[in-house]
Image (cartoon, rainbow, N blue to C red; front, side):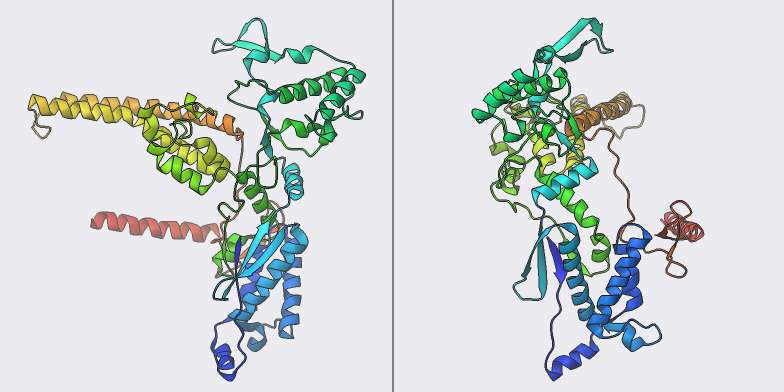
Amino acid sequence: MINLKKKISHYDDEGQEQHKEEEKIKWEWLENVWLEAIPGEEDKKEKGRDYLKFLWQQRFGSLPNEDSEEIDMQPKSEIELLVRDHIIDVLSRKSGLQLKLSLSANGRKQYCQVRAPMSLLERKATQLEYKLKFKPEIDPGPAFWQRTDGTYDRAGRPRYIELIEEQRLTSKDETNEALAILYKLGKIGPHDMSVFDEEETTEKHWSRRLRTLERIVDKVPCTNEYPAYASFTGKPKERHLYDEYPSVRGKTLFLSKDRLYLTRRIIDEVFDFGVLEENKLVDLITALHDANYGEMPTADWFLKRWVYFYQAEADRVGAPYVTHYAIIKHRTCPRYLRPFAQPLMEIRSYFGEKIAFYFAWLGFYGYYLIYPALGGLICTLYLLFSGTSDEAIGIHPEQIIMALALVVWSAFYKESWDIESQYCALKWGTLNFEEQEVDRPQFHGDPDGEPRRISPVTNQKETFYPPEKRQQTQRNSLFIIIFFIIAL
């Protein structure tokens, strides 16, 4: 949801006087903000700026003129109304999003609720090659694998090459007949009822799809704890591969965090709302919690099973870390570990991987603090029963032992978390993921010089701040820090 500014109209003489005294905004300031808020190359930015100038002329009757302060400056409420109408117009025309406008109770703010149709999300996911989880039946686990003769990996585990049943090939006629039967029984959709002649050209192709659909229909037991992920494609012949989740609009391929991420990417291609928020042209852009009532998990679900874990069911509180056996659905967490347990899989599906990684690290760290806590407790009991004071002069063996134990624990914890984080990335489909960095909304360039310049790398205009000024600021900050350190 986007919280937009709203103009308050003034019609009487008193209102006109208030209108005259209202804070005014210069076109030059709005132009610079607009160039920062429009993503993409310089041509796109300039087109957006020119269109905003055209709207300025339509609303105020003349083009911005730097030589005339009266024309170049307009009341803040008028500018906010211009920006609000323009944002709504561009989002509705260019993004394909569905918008719903409403006013606050006092009528001073306007809210814009944004909804992305599933077809739009699927197109965006295809464009971004967004990774989605396969159904567990695609690779059920070792019970369905074929083991090679005497080949083992570095950890001493046997190597597997492919699913045993997928080696059994069928003819095209047999495959079409089997798929038609599954369709008549209502087990598969109409897009899966026959072989795709143009894309499935060999027996191995259509036989593999038939075996996969049979496993999905039969709901075979799945023991693979780390399901596969792959880039989404809207091709009909591959839709059966991706896992589906219940929602108020029926089954969907996207979790709530997927829908939010894809919707935000669609919005960010039109405007950088971080810049608009920073410059107070938009109050807030945020996701609505429990907007689709009836989907799981919800904020209330987390309250009952995360905050009040001692009252929750043993198989719903989660696990202290991702590789713990209790993380698997319907498995129970031991009572003594429940203070450290978190529903990490639900956190990831609701808040996304970035937040889930933070809480995974927090839970893992809290769990591993048990060891130094026990060591500290032993040292305290030793001092208590031996009558020794830790403030006495001399060598204290217990302190030396505790210090060495903490050093060993720190190294052990660091290595353990490195391994755990890789398991998290594998389980959540973020292995080798790199996030694209963008300029912070607070970065405005050089206010005293040229805030935008031609980049020597991309040959496009970019927000720029001279390195020598940045270094001077860093030196001044360092001097102040050293001064206060010495003063203390």
